[in-house]
Image (cartoon, rainbow, N blue to C red):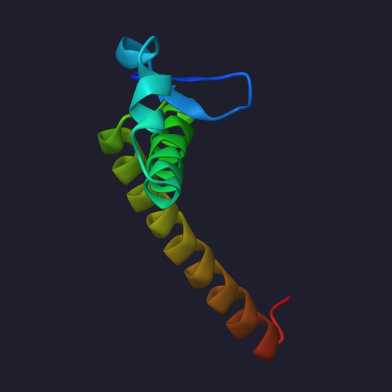
Length: 87
């Protein structure tokens, strides 16, 4: 997966293709807008840090839900067997 962000010396994300002008971009923004931009870029970088595509994340979420349902079913079977004295 191609990265679009990189971390600066402070650990904040910048856009790779714009890294040379990021100080100018931030310099032209009011403080609250600069903070909002930093927060958004940090979220994108955190997503990129996973190394997963959105499709892979959705597949993993579905698989996790399926496994959780299976675990719930197994726990119910164990409880039922215990109440019937089969364990």
